[in-house]
Length: 254
Length: 279
Image (cartoon, rainbow over all chains, first blue to last red; front, side, top):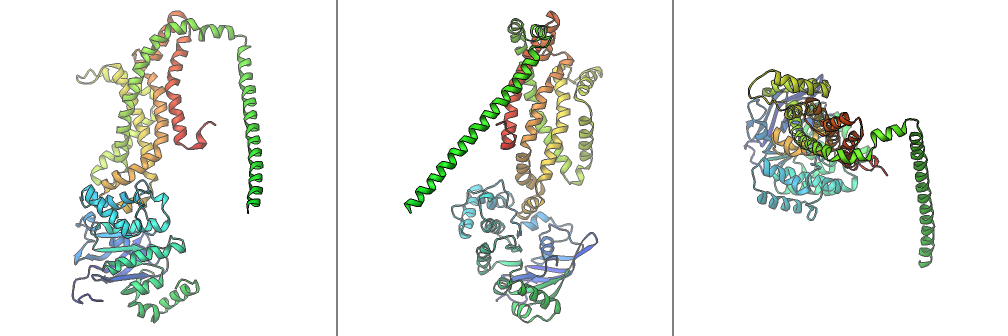
């Protein structure tokens, strides 16, 4: 996959730690994501995947370490978090669509209010994005009237609408009925093919193997194993990784 | 195929007749019990020893006809006052709720003031507040402060109801899931944009029924302004009652209040879903 090895990573975490009260959720995370790459974060629930994504998007304040976006430290208290979030996209596990707005209005809100696009401009692009993710004809529907898979695709379109430098996906299929998982994964695959830089927290190992350039296995707040999908998922070295994959296999998820 | 359809449709007919029978039965029961209860109450009142006296002093048609135009004229003042106060209350209540829910450190003194405002004006009986504002502010003899009792009464009501309504708004804001704020920030909105475009629209929709409920309460409480002297419906009714020792004008005033509060109450029911409505 062709990034020049010496280019600045799009995203980089250096020794990131985060505790909620007594509970240390992240205990020194180092990871980098280069342009057009996708890094999959895998690990048990509570291993810190979601928290890491929320810390990168500055929805949580980190305790120590740094997060860099295009080489710039964004976790410095002097940095305006709003400006940083406008350069990133985040998709939530529970979609978090705005229930009082239509699908199109959901996609357009950030474009108009955060990026200053005109209404016509934003709506044109919004319609194109919804069409691209297979939601043509649903522009005027409220989230209530959409299936889980459709809602999550609206959420992906919404996150993508701001032309982010990187997209952060937080277990985007975990809340879905099994038969709806495929359509959402297809949308992510589509973005990857276009060259979108992504960090993907996921429980779908097949998907991680297929889409990710690198896989990071988180265990109790640290990355205990990191490498290509082949290295981490097929030939894991660490006993924690093997145990995790074995449990998934037994549950029929790998 | 067609045979089974015919059988099904027979069964369906049967079910529907049975359902209709049930519906007729419950209607009959409702009607009968209403008749018994209302009839009983009416008989009880109409046969009471004091009824002829009460009918003469409370339900005197002649007095009603004569006093109604004056009471209605007074009621127009009530209507104006309740509309103006309600608009002010909706705006000030929202402002206080926003201040109280904001996290900006610069707003700390305002936040504290908001808390004190709500505690104080919600904690004082409205009638006392009308007295204090109505007689206290003119007593200061400061130029520039209003002295019109209608304005002063309106201010007192605004203070009291803003405190209540602020808490209604605040509950609504608090009821919006925090994931909504996260999502709004994630698409690049500022805190205040998230409040304006994402959180408030959802919050206001949720608290519309309790807000209307407070509006109904306010519509009645405008009568409290009468203690400061303005000739609104209740006051006029009282004056006429004092002149001819007949309480019928008060009934006229009560009917006027009902004429505007009842439609609003039905609206509140409808917004609260089918459970709230009388069926």
